[in-house]
Amino acid sequence: MIETPHYLVFSFTLYMIGIYCLVTKRNMIRLLLGIEILINAANFNFISLASSIPGLIDPLALSIVTVSIGLAASVSAVAVIIIVYAYRHYGTLDVRMLKRLKG
View 1 (cartoon, rainbow, N blue to C red):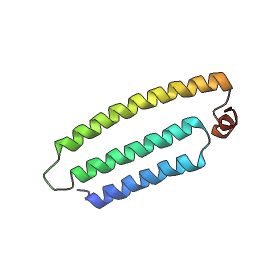
View 2: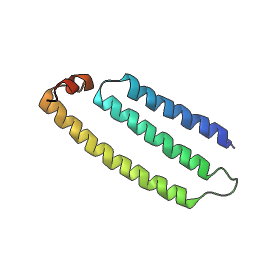
View 3: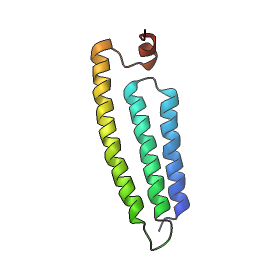
View 4: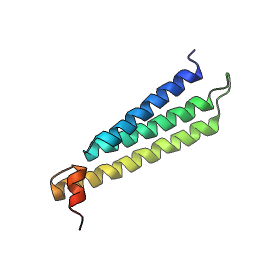
């Protein structure tokens, strides 16, 4: 059986990948994917810490993560709709270009 520190290292790796996506990418879709990776890393960390005691899994943590996954799916659906409308209206998904358009 894999121990808790391995899960925490994997969660930290996912979190760093999400931060890397947010820092380096300029495309709105890639930024959204980075945010989703961050949310998944937090959920994975929550689940791994909830099951850290051998033989005991906290059902409250599982239910909180289930609600979090549902909320993340609905927020990402709304974000995709906003991205599609921004692309239709401005013709670009570059965040730096869209910052210049405010006015």
